[in-house]
Length: 415
Ligand SMILES: [Mn+2]
Image (cartoon, rainbow, N blue to C red; front, side):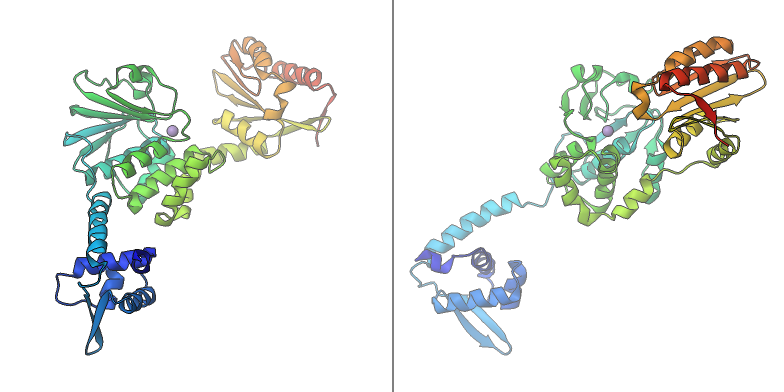
C-alpha cells in the first residue's frame, strides 16, 4: 500500500528531501531534517518507518547513518515519479525570485498633498518592494508630508521629492485619484498611470491605464500589501513597518477594522514592533500650542446651564485648537477669542452629542456682523472673524442668551 510509505506530510517532506539527495553518495538524518524542514525526532521516526517497510537501507559510518534507497522496492518507481513530479510543481510555486511586474525599469510614485501615513507608508512599501523586482521608483510628494509622516521617516529614512524635473514613463498615484489633491502636479499624457486607492474614484481614474481602486478597503496599504505579496515580493521589516503604520493610522488605531485588515496585521505583526509604530504615530503638540492651551486655561470664565459646562476664554493664537482641547477635556461648549490690534477671531466648539440641541453656525453667523466680519460653520464647530473688537461683551451676551434657549436653562457663573 502506497500510504504505508507516504502516509503523512512529514513522510512526504522527508522522502522528497531524500530524493533530492539521492545522486549524492551519502546523506544523514540531520541533513534530511534540515532539508525537509522537519524536526529531527520526526525525521528519525519516519526514516525508521521507511526502513521497516524496506523502502530504504541504512549503513553506519562512524557516528553517522548513511541512507540509501532500496530501488528494488515494488513501489520505488511509482513513489519516485509521484514525488518528483510534485517537486517540480512545488519549485515553480515557491520560486523565491519576485515576478517581474512591469517592463519598465524606472517609475514614479505620487502621493496626495500633506501626505498622511497611509499615503507615504504605502508609497515607501511599494518603492522598496518594486526594488526587489528591478523597478526603481522615486517618491514625489508635491504638497509635502504631514507631521506624522515625517516622524515615520525618522525610523526608516527615505528620500521624498517635493519637486521633480522629469516624469518617467510609469507613474503610480497613491491614496487619491483626484487631481486637486496633487498640489498642481500635472502628469504628462504620455505617461502610463496606475492608481492604487481606497477612496471613491476621482477624475484621474477615468484616464488611468490601470486602477486598483477599492473603496471598501480601509487603507491603501492593504491594497499595496496584496499587490506585493501576489508578486512574490518579500515583506521586509521596513516594508512591514510602513504598511503597519499606514493601517494603524487609517483604522484610527484599530478602531475601524475588518477581517481583511486583521489578516494582514496578523501577517505583519511578527515583523514589526507595534510600540515603534504607535510611538511614531502619537500626536505631539508644538511648544506654542501648549502655551496657548495653558494660557487659555488660565483665562477661563466658566458657566453652567444645568449639568452642562460652558467656558469662555481668550488666547493669542490656536483659538480653535484650544476650544477643541477644552471640549475634549472638561467643557461641553467652549468659546475662545483671539484678539489682535485690528482683528478678532472667535472659535466655538461643542461636544458632538449636543448637535441635536445647539447649532453654533447660527449664532456665529449673527456675531460675525457684530465684529464687522463674517461667521459660520457647523452645528458643533463654528467661527467668526472681524475687524471690530469693541463689541466683545455684546457678543458674549448673545451667545449666553442663545445657549440658555437652546439648552433650556438658566446660565450661572461657576466660581
Ligand atoms: Mn488612506
